[in-house]
Length: 250
Image (tube, rainbow, N blue to C red; front, side, top):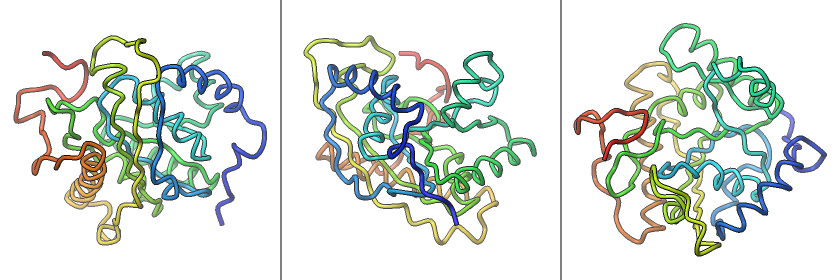
C-alpha cells in the first residue's frame, strides 16, 4: 500500500520555500481556488493544468500547496546532471523525464511512476508541453507524457484550469507589477475517466486518445472560468506552420 504524502504535516524543504514564495506571489495575485476537493489528500496523482503564461508554474505551485500537497513538477532529465541544480531537483523530489521515444525514456517513465506510487507523491505535468499556441489562449493539442505516466500505474489524472495569469504576465511578455493582487481563478476538476484506455495503455493510438480526453476536460474547466464555449477543435501548431517548443514568433 502506498503511504500518504506528508510534506504538509512534518518539516520538509518545501516549508522554507513556501515561507518565501507564497507571500511574494500574494503580492502579485489573489488566487481563488475552486474544486480543491478533487485533489487527493494522499497518494499519487498527476495534476494536468493549462499553460498560457511563463509564470503559470509559480501560480499552480502555490495553489497546489494551498490545497495541501507539495508541488512537484516534471523536469528535463538533463537538468538533474547540472551541479547544484540537480541536487535541488532531487532534494525536492522533482520527476525527471527523458524527451525521446527511446527504450531508455520508457524505462524512466516506469521508474518515475513507481516512485510516485511508492512515496504517495503527486506531480504536475503540462500536457501541452509548452505555452499554448492558440491565439485566444485555449489549450492546444496535448502530448502523451502525462497519460503515459499515469496509465503505467493507474495514477489518477486531475485536470486543472486557471484564468487571469495572462494579465500578470502575458504569453512571452513582461511581468506586470501594477495593479497588485490581480485575481486568478483556479478550477480543479474530478479525475479524468481513463478506464477504457487501460487495457491497451501502451499503444500509441490509445495514448493519443487518452491525451485528447484529458485536454477536453481541461478545456471544459477553462470554458467555465471564461464563461464561453471552448473551440470544437484544439489548436494544432503543425497545421499552422508553428514549432511546438521554444518561443512563439508573433
